[in-house]
Image (cartoon, rainbow, N blue to C red):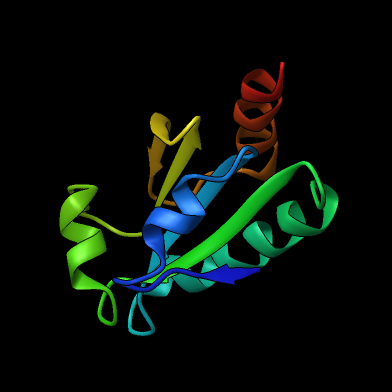
Length: 104
């Protein structure tokens, strides 16, 4: 699991893999609900998808760049571009379906 900061985003976004970024905060209840699901996805897609977490309080510039207004938000990057996003708590099946469609 990668941790996104204001300085390492370009390197992570430039990955040749699909990148899933979980935008969260420690004080966010729904984020705590979604976190174990993101961890499971990271384990199941290891080697095929880069999964990263971004604490919006610690990386405010990154959150602003992606126009994060509500958390939890999941951003799906493909070829360095935003390919999809979800806002709020979503099911593991929904996340997996989005990743599978991006992986082809």
